[in-house]
Image (cartoon, rainbow, N blue to C red; front, side, top):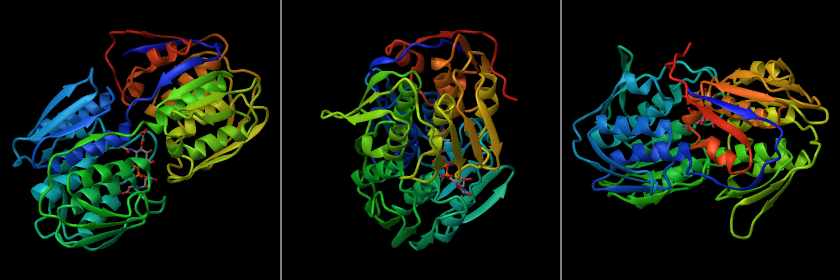
Length: 430
Ligand code: EPU
C-alpha cells in the first residue's frame, strides 16, 4: 500500500490543470454499451475507478482501446450477448451499477451484482430499481445479483426523488434505459448534477432524444438505434474544488486551469464567505487567493446546485483552522463524517451532533500519521496535511487513486512538499 508523506506549511503557488470528471466518465463509458459503432471519449483521467469500468465493459463484450497519453478511450461493442457484471468487479466500485440501465435498454436483460456496503453510510439503490420497474422491467434479486428483464419496457412518467433528494447514478441509469425504450419517458425530480447533464449530451450525440437537460424534468423520446459518438468529458469539479481548499488552507495563490466556475458556484460562494478571493479568469479557469486568516462559515450539503457532499470533508479540514466556529451539515449522506476522527488526530476540534459537525477553529493543525478511509475523506487529510505543522503521513492512498489523477505530482507543481512512498505491503480493507 502506498502512502503520501506531506511536510506542511508551504503556501501553494502556481498553476494546476484539472482532469476530466470521474463521475462523468464512468456513466458515459457505461453508455457506450448502447452504441452501434465506435465511440471515442476524450479528456479521460487516469484513475483506478476508470480501470474498473473498463474491465466491466470488456466483461460485457466491449472492445476497449485506451490511450492514456492522449487521454482517449475508444470503445466498440463486439458481443452483445453478454449481460453479467460480476461481483468481483462491482464490489470494488459502486458506480458499476451504471451498466444496469444501458444493458436493459439495449440488450433487454441484465445480471448485475448488487453493490455492497460503503464506508460513507448506507447507499441503497431502491430508486434505481423502482424507476426501472416503473418502465416495465421485471426485476428479481437472487444470489446477490439483480436479475432484470426489460423486454416489455415502455415509456412512462417516473418520479425519481427519494428521502435525500434526487439520485445521481439513478437518474443516469434511468436515462440510459429510456433512450432505446419505445414511447415517451418523463423523469421527474431528476438529478441536475453537471455529470448527469454531460451524460445526457453524450446520449444526444449518439442520436437520443432528450429534452430538459440539466433540469429536474427530463423528457426522453425512445429511438430505435443509437450510433457511436465522440465526446469530451467535463472537467472534474470535485478535483477543482479540492484544489480550491488546498489553496485556501495554505493561504496560497493558485490558478486552477480548466475549472468550470459555473459548476462550482456553491463552493466558490462558501470560500468567499471565508474571506478567500476567487476570480474567474477570462480564458477559463479560476484564480484563488487566500488571506492569512480564514473566517468561519456554515455549510449544508445538498443536491446540485447546492453545496456538493463530495467537497464536505475538504471544506471541513479548511474550516478547522478558521477564526471561530463553523457548522457543517450533511444532508446527502448523514453518516459521511469518517474524516472527523482523523482530523481530530491532527489537533482539529470537531464535535458531531447528528448530521452536523461543529468545527471550532484552532490556531494550527499538527501533522500526524492518518488513515485514508474513502476517496473524499482521504483528500481532506491531504488538504489538512498541506497546512499542518510537521509531517503528515496518509496511509491507504489507494482510496485517493480511485478518483484523483496524480494528486501528488499536481500538488508538487504548486510547491507542496508531498511525496509518495511505495510500500509493498498488500492492501487490506477492514
Ligand atoms: N439514495 C436512495 N436510494 C437510491 C439511491 C440513492 O435513497 O436508490 C440516497 C442515497 O443514500 C443518498 C442520496 O440518495 O442519501 C443521494 O445518492 P445518489 O444516488 O445521488 O448517489 P450516487 O449516485 O450513488 C453519486 C456520486 C457520489 C456522490 C453522490 C451525491 C458517482 C459515481 N458517484 O453517487 O460520488 O457523492 O452522487 O452527489 O457519480 C465520490 O465521487 O466520492 C462519490 C461518492
